Image (cartoon, rainbow, N blue to C red):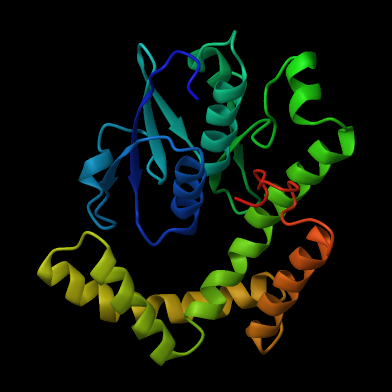
Length: 242
C-alpha cells in the first residue's frame, strides 16, 4: 500500500536485461502499477532526457518528478518509501548518492552508495528485520546477485555461435529494433557477444564448462535458503528472493 495513495511510475527498460527484469519482479510482487517504455538499444532516443545512459531508469512522480537510476537503488528506495511513513521519496533518494571513480585503466565508473540498505528508522527496522542477521543476510545475497550471479549469464547464453545467434534472435524479437537494425543486431550482436563472453569467462575465472559455474551458483543459493523455509524471507520473499 502506498503511503500517500498514489505513485506514478514509468520504467525505461530493455525487456531482456536481467537488471530490468529484477525491477519488474519487485514492482509486480508489490502490486505497483507502472508504465513501460521499451528503449531502442542502439539509438536510445527514449532516454535522451537523461545524462545517465543505462537502463533501468525509473521515473517516479510522488508530487514532483524524480529520476531513479540503478536497479538496486530503485528497489531499495521504493521499498523504503513503501515502509516509511515520514520520508518523502525525494529525501529517500538523497540517501543513495552517486559516486564517480576512475579504474586502473582510466575508465570512469559510477556507483551508488548504500544501495543495498533500506533507510528506515529504528522502529521500522525492528518491524521489518526482527533480528540483525535477517538484514545482513538479505543484503549479502542481493549483492551476490549483482556481483556474481549476473556475470554468469552472458558466458552461458552466448556460449557457442549457435547459442549466441539463438539468444539474439530472442532479444531482437522481444526488443525495440527497426527491421534493418534488427537484422544487423542479430548477426553482428551475436558475433560480438560470443567473443565478449569468452573475455568475461576469463575475467571472472569461470570453468571451461561455464554451465558448471551456473549450476554451482544455483546450488549455493538453494543451500543458503535451506530446507526449512519457503523463501530466504521466510514464508514471503524478501528483496534477495526477488
